[in-house]
Length: 438
Ligand code: C2E
Ligand code: CA
Ligand code: CA
Image (cartoon, rainbow, N blue to C red; front, side):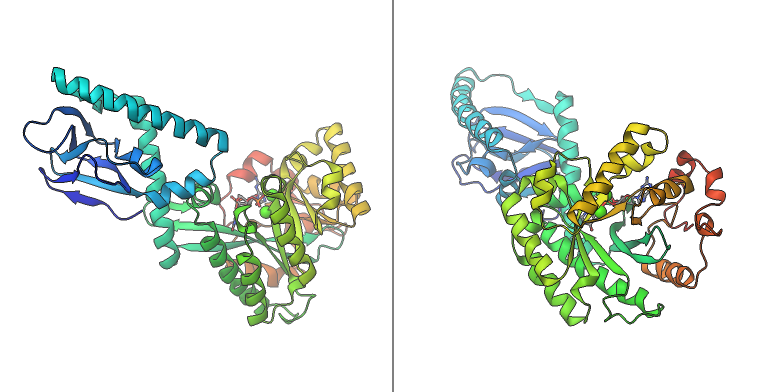
C-alpha cells in the first residue's frame, strides 16, 4: 500500500464517470460524496475517520458512481486494484461470485437512489455514526498498514530468524534447527509469525518473505556451524528446517531459489528440510506435491508439520513425498495425562516406522514428556524443555555447549532425562521469555 496521502479541503478526489483504480481509507478528516462536481450537486453522504470510499471501482473496475471532494483537510490511505486483485484470488469462488453479484445490484440501486435523492434534495446521510463497520474498517486499515510495513521491513532488515534445536531423543545428539521468523517491528515491538504471516499470505507477499527467510536462515546456519566440530559441507552437520506456506509451493520460485542458495553456500541438500502443514497440502495438492517431490529428488527432507491436526487420512499421507512427520504439540501436552492420546501417539510412531518417515515430537516442555516419548521409541524431539527459539548468536553458543556434552537440566543424569524440569509446570514454562534458553 502506498504511503498516506494528505489532501486539502476542497480537493476533488475523483469525478462521476471517471475510471477508478484506487479506493481510500480515511485516516482523518471528512470527505463529501456528491452526485457530480459543481455547486448544483446533491450531497449524498459524508464519510469520516475509519471509513472506506471508492471501493466499488477497485473491485469491479466500473466507472466512479459519484464525485468525492475533501470537506476538510484529510489523511487517506490509498488501496489499489492490484492489492484487491491478489486478495480476491485467494477468496472462495462462491464468495467471489456473491460479492460480484452484490456489487452489480448495489450499483443499480445507487443509480436509482441518487436519481431519487437528486429530485428530492434529501438530507445527507452522515455515516460517521456507523460504529460496527468502522471497527471492521479500522482492522482492515491496520492490516493494510502492516502490508506496507512488511515490504519496507524486509528492506530495512527488521525481520530476524530464530532457531530452535531438534535433538535425537535416545542419544541427545543435536539433529538440527528449525528456523522461525520474528519481526522486530519499530512501532509494535517483536511480533511472532501469527501476526504477520496471514497478512503476507493474503497480500501476495509470501514469496518475497520466504525468499528472504531462505537467505537469512542459511546464513545463520553457517554462523552456528562455525562453532561446531563438523564442517558445513558435511551432510552430517546439523540440519536446517524452514517453514513454507501453501502459496510458496504454487510456483517453482522457492525450489529454484533454494537450490541456488544451497549451491552457492556449498550446503548439501540433505541438510535442508522444508516443513509444510497438512492443511497447506490440502489446499494446493497437485502443484505442491510436485514441488515437494523435486525437493526430495534434490536430496532435501520434507516434513509434514502439525501432524494430527489436519484431516489427512492415512492413505493420503502414504502418497506424499515426505521424509518426516512433526507430531503437533497438542498431542505431547495431553499424552502424559491421557491414555487415549498416548495410543494415538503410538499409532503415529508406528505409521512413521511403516512409511519410513522420522517422527519429531513438538512441544516437549517437561522431562516427563521426553522420558515417555523416548520410551515409546520416538526418534526426535523439540520444545521449550530443551531450548527456546533464539537468534543465531545465542543458538550458536547453546549448540557449542550442547555438543561439548553440557546438557541442560532434563538431560543431566545417567538416564539422560531427569532433572529440575519436573518441578516446573507447563503454565510456568509457557510464560518464560523467548531468549531464555534452558
Ligand atoms: P510451527 O512450525 O509449529 O513452529 C513451532 C512453534 O511452536 C513455534 O512458534 C515455537 O516457538 C513454538 N514452540 C516450540 N516449542 C514449544 C513448546 O515447548 N511449547 C510451546 N507452547 N510452544 C513451543 P512460533 O515461532 O510462534 O511459530 C508459529 C508458527 O508460525 C509456526 O508453527 C509456523 O507454522 C509459522 N512460522 C514460523 N516461522 C515461519 C516462516 O518462516 N514461514 C512460514 N511460512 N511460517 C512460519
Ligand atoms: Ca514448523
Ligand atoms: Ca508444528
